[in-house]
Amino acid sequence: MKEKNMLEKHKDIARIDQESKRTHGWYVRVRFNGQTHSKFFSDRKHGGRYASLEQGIAWRNETEVKLGKVRSNRNIVTVSGTKTGVVGVRLNEKLNRYEVSWVMPSGKQGKTSVAVNKHGQAKAFEIACAIREEKNRERLAS
Image (cartoon, rainbow, N blue to C red; front, side):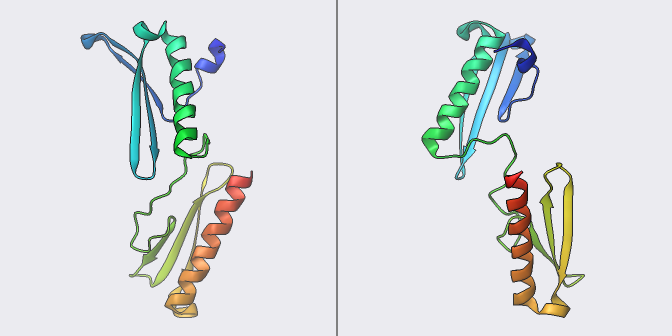
């Protein structure tokens, strides 16, 4: 691996340099289906800073394959923090609308809303989910 590539960020991999504990290496974490798998790759044990990173990347990729997780450098949210249970769709009760949010291919945030008064509760939710699904497809296709 060339030094130029080493300067790039690597998803799910963090550098740890803690001089007080003489800890130097890469912390690799793979999250999938509500579980976290992690491993630390020490520079000393793995042949230096770059060699330990290469081994960390290889472990991350192998672990994702083993778990059935699709390899992507994009952040993909799979668990909803809203009461709707749908990622990127939430009910704004004060404004009586479903708010839809997504990340555009450019990396910027996109937002829109669907009025409950205009469509009714069930139809507004259905429309909001369809918008979110379409926007997610567009992002992942780019």
